[in-house]
Image 1 (tube, rainbow, N blue to C red):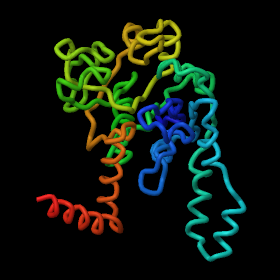
Image 2 (image 1 turned 120 degrees about the horizontal axis):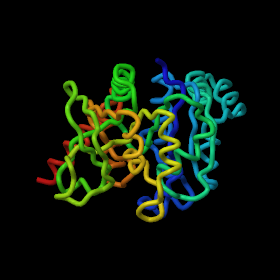
Image 3 (image 1 turned 90 degrees about the vertical axis):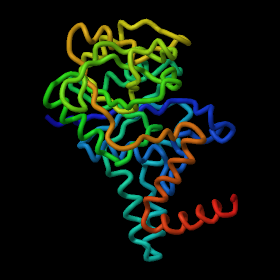
Length: 290
């Protein structure tokens, strides 16, 4: 069964990147020559999503402008013979139908999903957190969709993290089903080290069924007055199964300054044009440091 809709949560304030995020949305920070948000839209479109619902904040019109066509620029590029660049700009507006809805207050990921709920209908949808860059790109969502088609229910992607890092994530308690697939028994949001049911942390990709919306509507605000998506899973688990599959590949956190730098370096090293030059530069730095 094809999943035709994706939600991208892009309403965060980006305080870890201040002062640059005072005027520039965090999602517009570049990873090589593309902003973070473009990677999320490309991933959704590659998995067959025809409608992308982007949940943003009222002061993030830059995100909307980025995916609009700029006919004057396209015409200028074509006039210079730079038809490839003109075609790439057109592609931005043609990848998927994108609609935007504002989360008026930063009240948590669960609240962001509820904000998008009226546009989702009674069908499963993909949820993407754009800070999480998963490499190889698209492979994780493809595997998650296969799990959803086989077992039904919601599907999370998880990765084992160090004990000292469990307090940064939603952590699942689960039992193995088949290879790298688990059936989720419970979810704990940011547990203290030593109190976590496992070290399997939820990363920023979800396949959610429409039943998540009434579960979120019944979920009271938690820490900081926010409605957390993970807090809705106990209600959901009463009515349907939730599965998790282990992340294939590597996840980079572009939502922190060190992670953003690491992501840029990893993408550049993998690029056939940029990689050799960057590798030579890094090797030179290491020799200088010795």
